[in-house]
Structures are given as C-alpha cells and as structure tokens.
Length: 325
Image 1 (tube, rainbow, N blue to C red):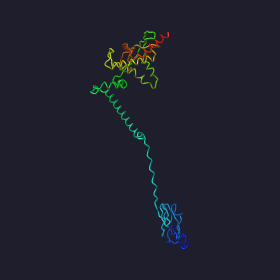
Image 2 (spheres, rainbow, N blue to C red):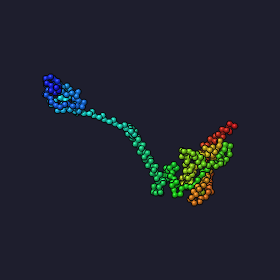
Image 3 (tube, rainbow, N blue to C red):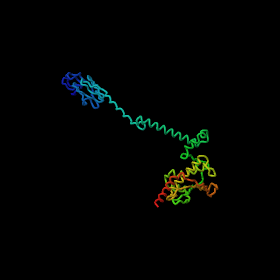
Image 4 (cartoon, rainbow, N blue to C red):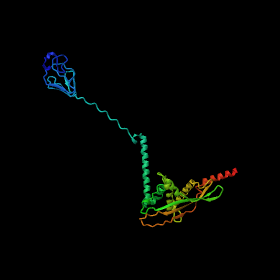
C-alpha cells in the first residue's frame, strides 16, 4: 500500500506545512512532488505534519490541499511553502580612479602650473614670430623693428638656407689665425698659423656625438663676418663691428687652448686668414671649376681690451721676479 492510501488518522504523510496542533490536513491526491534541491529533503507524503521546507526551483505537481510550490523559496512555519524571490545584494560602488597629472596637484600648485605653461606658450609664440620675421621677405614690420628682430635671432638662432638653395655652397673654407705675443722678457714674437677649421674637423671625425661648438661656432662666426664686411674688409653697420669682436674672442680662446703665448706671454694682436678651395664636381656633370685656392688675409686686430687682465697679471709676475732678484 502506498503512503498516499494510508489512513489519515495514522498521522503520517502529512503535507509539509500542516498545522502544529496535530489537526488532520485535507486529503491529498496527486502524482508526485519533484524538485531540484528538493522540498524539504526531496520528500513527499500524505496526511503528515509538515516542518519548515525550503526549495530551489522546486514544484509540487498536482498536490491538493497545500499545493506546495517553490522557486528559490523558503517554507513558512504556518505549513505552506511560499515561493519568494531573494533580491541580490547591491553591487558595491566602484572606487574612484586616482587623479593624475596636474589634476593631482593642490589648487595652489595647479595655478602655478597653469601660469608656467602660459609663460612658456607666450615665449614660444614670440620666438617663432621673430624667426618668421627674420626669414620673411622685407615688409613693414621688419623695416620698423628689424633691429629688435636681429638682436633676438643673432647669433644663436640665425637661419641658413644654403643647403636647400638652387646652388648650394660648394666650397671648403679653412679659417686660420696667428698672434703677436709679448714675451716675459719684453720681446715680441709672432706665432705660426693655427688651422682652427682643421682642429674642429679632427674633433668631429669619428665622434658620434660631436659638440655644437665644434661644428658651428667658427663656421657661423666666419659667415657672420663675411656677410657684414665689404670687399675691403670694412664693417658695414653695427653688426660688422659685432662680428669682429666675436672673432677676436674666438681667436683668444683657441690660442689659449693651444698655449700659443707660452709661459708669461700675453697675446697683443691677432690676424685671421681664410683659404677657400672649390669642391670638385662629379665626373658626369661636365662642370669645370678652378682648383686654385683663394686666400683672404685680414688686417691685424688689437686684443688689448680682451687681454687687459692677463697683461696686468703678467706685469705683476715680472715685478715679483725682479724684486726677488
């Protein structure tokens, strides 16, 4: 005999959820109760006393009297299993992303950064504008403010477009210098010629990172001089005088590097000369150029203003030697 056919008075097989006072529940008829992760312990019965049952997607099929259903449900103590949908807990709020860059600074430093960027932007725009006026054709602005533009551009930012000209420079220019030196015994001697271009060439050859000074200082200074002097080596305007001063200082630096004055000697005057030779054209061009070098020799320049301190030191040393004697 099946459990469903037993007498209700036996107190067994009661549908889960019948009253706790022992009263008989209405008679049940039905096929079967099934469930995944069942109702109670996946048990079915008739005329039984029900305890608290839980079900996960469980369904009592065709059960009369209690008609237990469960969908992720929990059984109540009043004898009925009521399906309830359990809400998922709310997802935690995402953590705010850390601030980076200028936004990570305090307001005071943010203001400082903005001001610094503004100053840099203005300086860059001003520099680009002045360089543009320098390379642009003559116009109203360059005529009125040409001196200010030249003061900013020369000599550091001068633009040279010879490489892209229709007829680029095809010459080798060697710049040489010599000096008149007053010796410690009061005599005057003249040094030999120092080939400054050759010295720069030796310093650059084989050097993967040659200095900007070795590459451009002497070359640009000589181009500056040639562009601001006439064929008689007379300066044209204030820039011509400035170019002479620039070459004097370069000569003193290079002569001192080569110890041209010697012990106790002082450089009194310097003289430059250039030796220009044409670059031989390629064989397929058919162009003919002269292979004879052209020499340009400048007059002697006094460097007394630049060597005043050295002369004073030399005189003091001579006086000390005389006193010791």
